[in-house]
Image 1: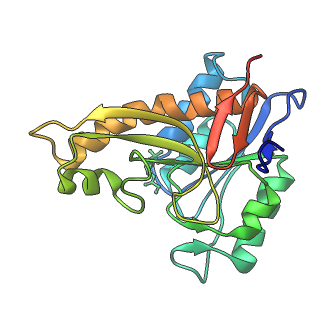
Image 2: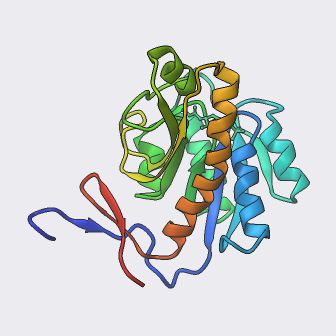
Length: 220
Ligand code: GAR
């Protein structure tokens, strides 16, 4: 404790390569960027399982193509959150495959305290905006509609709020005068695909610390 504020070590060194469980709802390009970084040797980790809350989501095809156990898990009865028996199914799936870190990669659903308690300080999310600006859905469109000149991506620890947790990595991109929502999102996604592997690399190094809202890496 320093100044009454606890310093949390979310992934103590010595636990070996990160065993990542991924949750998604869509195309899965961010999960693919994690797989590509692992294959390239720039991220010491394994994706041990992938679950989606949308049947037939492309992220499941991508995972299966890489030989990773991947399942659609029914989130019913909730439309926008993961809670109750559905949440328990997700936790059981992740735990049964040995996941120790959960990466939300385009998972369009609010996770609740049950999942967070099952993986304390080990649930990460990627959000297509420079938080705390533009939380919520279609963040790139929010930035464009607001007239922002800079947009970007945030990878953060998930806490009980929506897109409010401690920030691990941010990367910025310019908003151009002739941008459409699609062109801006595409520019942000290029940076997303660097940011998620970078955040996971930091976590896996065992050097990350969380103190209050601040996340930093201690020297190795
Ligand atoms: C990404 O742009 C991600 O930042 C966003 O969904 C997309 C998923 O793409 N996530 C959110 O908006 C979460 N609030 P992907 O399925 O190709 O990784």
